[in-house]
Length: 440
Image (cartoon, rainbow, N blue to C red; front, side, top):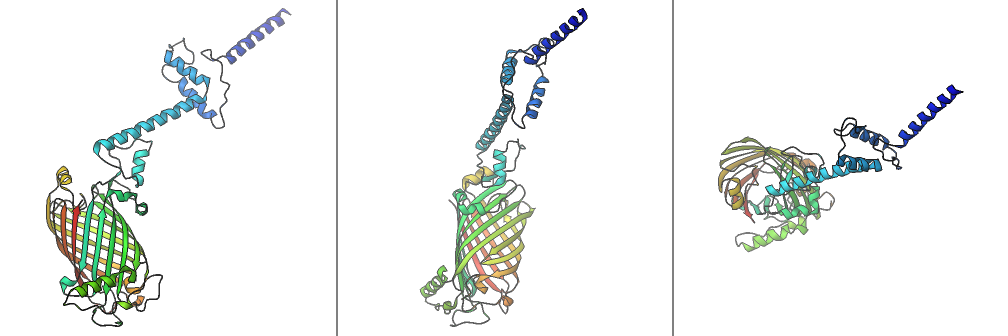
């Protein structure tokens, strides 16, 4: 009996201490009554393990290390609710993210860079919770504004046929970034500077002569179009690249007022005859086109540069692909330093030349899939006269050369174009292009 009583006593003492240590933790706090939710047990266990192995915190305080007041408060908070550690970890991550975001904003503010948040790489740089490289890929928004007026005409080449007149007005300003169509522009995936703009374009085409009435079969039909374009230019100075994307919306046909413009001009000049045959022009139809151009510098010398370029168009007006090269030499600023012109202050800050004077030569080949000025509109097939697809030249060559002069915020370009026949039995054609650009 004595042995049995002694054994029972030992068992009771064992269960007493087991109960005691089971209800108390290593600092004497009662266990939390909050149970981890589904999927949280593993995270809480690993968090507790990390705390138990942290420097300065021991599973049995008083035996090897001294617990500080801050440690006690932290332990008290953690034992009050096991989920508190997860919340604190999330709060710490949020604070780290906020710190990165603020530091990036401060960096951009100190350098005067405004990120273009239309670009995925800019959003990734600014909002990513991961610390980026010292020089992150980001696309800035240019604060510069320009007005560019382009005029094409063959009158200086003593002809009045085929592509006979063109007017294009471009306005580039940072405010056009908010244009809804700018969201349709092609993104760029490296560093660079974005320029946004809009265009107003009217082009006119006539047969080989405007002095004969009726339909000149086998010749080019009368045609004219008018559209508004929205474009974005990304200039990558580091990689010597420039990417341009543009979407155009307008009309081809009599609603483009091409006939009115040419008749008004001819009637205002006493020596000109009124053009005949506009009543047979390509009929009204939708113009909806998308264009992408890429330019790459392959030779970049102080006074000499060679560029390669490609251009693709898809839509109801043109479907084509072109590729070529441009050579320029003279007193030049680097082609990819800006858009070829800058204000006096920007030139001074960048150390670029205030004055540029150079010659240039361009050459390109083009594959033609569809040309509404020859074949008529894509949807409206009621045009009296158009050329069948079999008579369209599928390969066309274009060459040009000219001279450019710029000083501070003003630039002048004069360029002579030559174009191979665009249709069967057609002729080579030439015209002069003049462009004036102003910094606003």
